[in-house]
Image: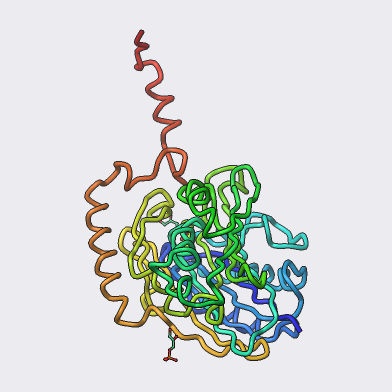
Length: 362
Ligand code: 13P
Ligand code: 13P
Ligand code: MG
Ligand code: MG
Ligand code: MG
């Protein structure tokens, strides 16, 4: 019997501004999920202004009914958001009507289907004020860096490595790299996380799915800069996969990601507990939460709020120091993103206004 874990997320209105989700929306989502006979189990998570529906079922990936359920929940939550005049109500819902699959309609989706093992620990990572490529560096460390993951060296069941499916979000193409042999080739691409994203990772010996991320980039889908693409990622742990602590370890060093303030700035990804998942300073800094579950016949036993561990205090401290430094740069790159990457820009208007004052040089 195969179990599918589906994590479908959307920002359908922030409380207050882009900092959090109003409790009334979470309550609505919980009610609709627990009332559904489609699912084995569910949990409603959130980070910042993003609602994350964590669902288990036996319907497989890309199932129309499961996606419809998520869509209906986001629509119902949007109605409440409109009534409360929450900020950016319906922000991530690009389409007016559901058409069979939420992919391409705005919500982010990470899904994986597998035979549940004797023990099945999983981690759902959820981030705000960033983009799908934010997972590239931590996923690389978890599944390809022996200085992060001891198991790559000392666990006979991991020693053959992993396959990485990488998506080109601009040209809508994919390629699979076999690691460790192809890490240098792969890094050429995944080092550019605004364009190339690790979508899925497979255990090489068994072919089993090991990790799956959401790679939707709303700005590309909408053909204009909406760019609200705060991502999620599911990682299976232990027994041939990274140990739980190996999957968490990359976040002990906050890396810089895109998506802070107006989706147009770079900032450190700060690992936080659910209680601290409410970005406020300059609308950030960007945040990541890690919820752990043991699956038991598809039931979600948990969550454990991993980044509540004081062992991540130094990472938070460092993220705050990096944030302080980057803020001193104000409107200058690389704190402000490169022109092609910003969600907001006045460049066309200002250029138009000053058009006649630019003198051609020869
Ligand atoms: P325990 O000895 O606590 O079971 O931990 C085993 C382990 O491999 C941790 O990474
Ligand atoms: P979200 O992507 O979380 O909605 O944040 C957008 C923003 O502009 C924050 O300043
Ligand atoms: Mg928002
Ligand atoms: Mg958000
Ligand atoms: Mg965003």
